[in-house]
Image (tube, rainbow, N blue to C red; front, side, top):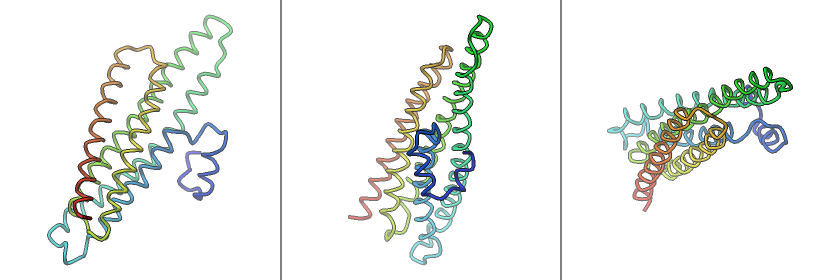
Length: 210
């Protein structure tokens, strides 16, 4: 499943709708976010090379380049999230008939659960960068395509909030109180910043539409 970006979109939909455990919420959130930031990149492309927007050419080019880096990172993280979930499932399937086996299984589950929590958090951090990019292009992008920057804002923020649900469910498995506290604090900050960036981007979009 790590080569999911090479699938046809029809195959991705079929796999997502099936009873297979992956792709699941984390990886699908990453995919949705990648589509969102692609819209920001499109607005950037439609801004570059236009005489009317010559003053913001360099900014538009920078934002567009950053959008491609985010898309590449989300592709990598999507594959990593799928692999992390598979490792967690493997840990749960370990034998636990003896005290020694149970201890080994518990240790493996804790280790895998931490990775399965950190990865969606990393996806959320990457989606926050997508929102920073979107907020920037919303203020300078080609007005003829500015509604697509709004689409980017909605999709990227929704994807970020969605992937944080995977953080919420996975962190409950973890016994390390310090780790859990750190994750919950970061989760709260990401959710708050994402909402602020979405609102700022949409305000710029609506101002330039209306």
